[in-house]
Image 1 (cartoon, one colour):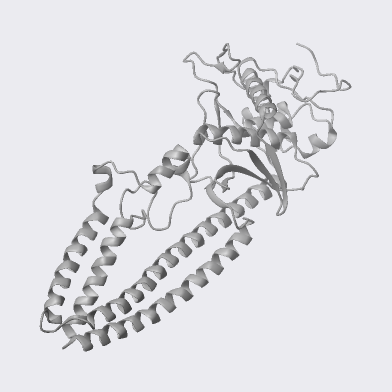
Image 2 (cartoon, helix red, strand yellow):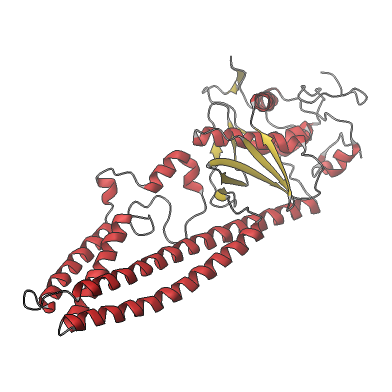
Length: 413
């Protein structure tokens, strides 16, 4: 083994010099061999697992990565502040999604109420033309009441029975889940129904909604015609009911506007642009692990947002805002870009590094960055098998900022 020459310049992406490590900093090496494709695999031909955080730590300093693998946790005020800031960010994202769901629900209810008004007005004109001698309003009411009962039973059954799965009918949500595969199962949970529920109101089943909506309309018409002694009275009752529903719709419209305002406030508080939606948020509790068995890469990006129909990973960084992205942060984001592509089957054009509230950097997902990620992943796998990680820089400021400096015997400060 050779020792580290502090005066020798180090090129980015080159293999760091091997430095003897004290026994207390050594980690147990993993048995494995390098495959023909350069990926290191175990005896079961499985790629050695490398997380996006592993790549970030290794790019910052291989020795810091080695210390983390040996169980040396990062300490310091910056680490605590970073964790608290990330928890705050994820809570804001969750609140935004809840406000977004409430707005959608309020808007749907308002649209139903508004449509009922037009139905009542149209029916008032129709019933005013009913010939009492041919068909009295009471007889029409009986037929409508029977239809309302039938539609109500059908609507309730369609809500509670998973009939879509019986006939293998694809739903809108199933199509979305298929598109984003395992990613969709770990999006922020809906307020009303869990992901994966087949059929039902919150699944957005238009058939269920139509049946229940029809039952309401037929039932209200039956009541109106039962009370009506003649066609003029029936038309008057329908007009009065239209006015009543207008008041209810106005009240619901106010709720919708308030929900829209609350969502906008939550969006601004979370720092989300107006034309962006959030498909995934890592809250360290329900967010799923993205993985690629071919390369061994895995990780959880802070967010995956939908911009112009594309899934874009976003990595939030706290602390001091740099003038340009750190190389270690870039390699971590590249890992997320690869995982999003592998998971969704769609190639994201770029990823976003976000420093603070406003500082955004786009990292392109191109061939150069693909090669860069592949080389870093394989180097980390090699170190997991062969060992020999050591400090690869001569910067006192980097050592000063390292949260594992307390356990490092090669620290420059």
